[in-house]
Length: 130
Image (cartoon, rainbow, N blue to C red; front, side, top):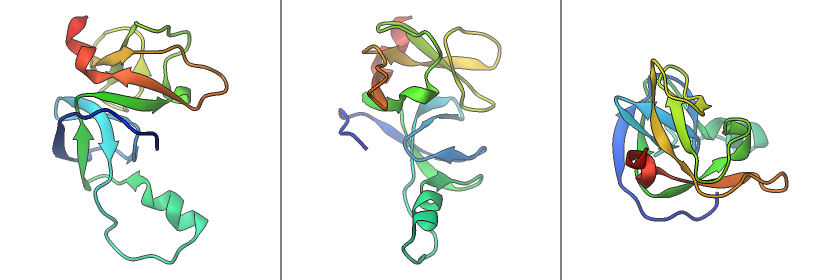
């Protein structure tokens, strides 16, 4: 995963499955999910490496709630431009371009998503600017 700027973090328990490094919102804390530990030792394999990235329901994890973070471009709302706000649905962690019921502020896209890039920088510190 690319390097990121410093930020604050909170500990939460997952109410829905989320992948390490992906956007999430738990108990009013929108941010980036970080898996903190693997509960049982596993044999090294591609399947176990993929499974290790999943944060399961009822698993304790950390949410990065501030700073600049890379977000997979495939998760961004279609047609979003640099400088535009991003929102997140509380029920399913889906990023959307407009506010509404069950949707909270997530951050601001800092750069245009590019086809060649798998990541785009999102600034969570700017969520209070819109």
